[in-house]
Amino acid sequence: MELQILDSKTKNKICILERVPASASVEIVKEIFHKKFPKLYPSRQSFRVEPRGKSLKDSEFLSKCSLGKDNTLYFKDLGTQLGWSTVFYCEYTGPLVIYLLFYLRLPFIYGDSFAFTSSKHQVVHIAAACHSFHYLKRVLETKFIHRFSHGTMPIKNLFKNCSYYWTFAAWPAYLINHPLYTPAMYGDVQIYVGLVIFILCELGNYSIHVALRNLRPEGSKERKIPFSSTNPFTGMFNFVSCPNYTYEVGAWIAFAIMVQCAVSVLFATVGFVQMAIWALGKHRAYKREFSNYPRGRKAIVPFIL
Ligand SMILES: NC(=O)c1ccc[n+]([C@@H]2O[C@H](COP(=O)([O-])OP(=O)(O)OC[C@H]3O[C@@H](n4cnc5c(N)ncnc54)[C@H](OP(=O)(O)O)[C@@H]3O)[C@@H](O)[C@H]2O)c1
Image (tube, rainbow, N blue to C red; front, top):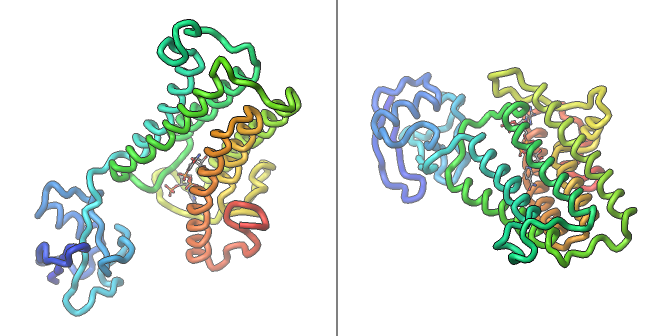
């Protein structure tokens, strides 16, 4: 068959792909298109049936897509792609290093008189340990736990995501490690309550990541409905679709309680809003994909959202 390829933005004709097998999948179409346009490797190609529609998955077959009488597909260039894990490593190693630069009080940060001095407040050291632990955990999880189904993402995500994570590491780090920082209003009680919740949420987040890993056989892109296991932290699956996000938000709220810093509250809030948007999308996708999806679950906040 002949496939007409139009630009999804301008609707101008890009090319005609000839002799495409009618039984071909989108993956095959991408390979044929790549041969015609060597710079547009498959992972930066997106094909849609409608100009503003959803990208077709590689595994979808042309015979199952409603291509219209002209056999038309709309093409969008997703731009230069980077490995999914590479983006995650950049996102997470940044905060790890940046926070510690402030913790060490490098000379240019608070002036020479405070260079390489150490805070007299114990909470400052606890906060540095928690922050470093969190990002080290995420680097190690990216390497050893997560089984991603996506190979790549657009390079522009690297700049967007790194700006977000790096700024929200540097800003509170500057304030918490500042020589004039004053610790929590309710003293040790507030600090240790925050610390305990932080540790529990980190354990919860890790447990959910392991549970999600165990859902997907190695090398596959399979998706299944997650359920709670013998690990009590996975019990959160009985209430929400994305408990890893619930625990992540919990950890940052706990961190904010511990250090009593307004910017940490802001980071927890922005993180919550972003993760809530993603969780609602994932929750809807679960319900669409699995007719037997448990009805009582919410997306991210038990009983509420
Ligand atoms: N602080 C913040 O602002 C912030 C924001 C976002 C994330 N995070 C942290 O980063 C972690 C990872 O984020 P994420 O957005 O990648 O989490 P995610 O979408 O829940 O995915 C985690 C891993 O589980 C896999 N997975 C998810 N659902 C699955 C299913 N039903 N069956 C099989 N595998 C499944 C995912 O594969 P796929 O590749 O198929 O999705 C991915 O490898 C979060 O849990 C959170 O701790 C923090």
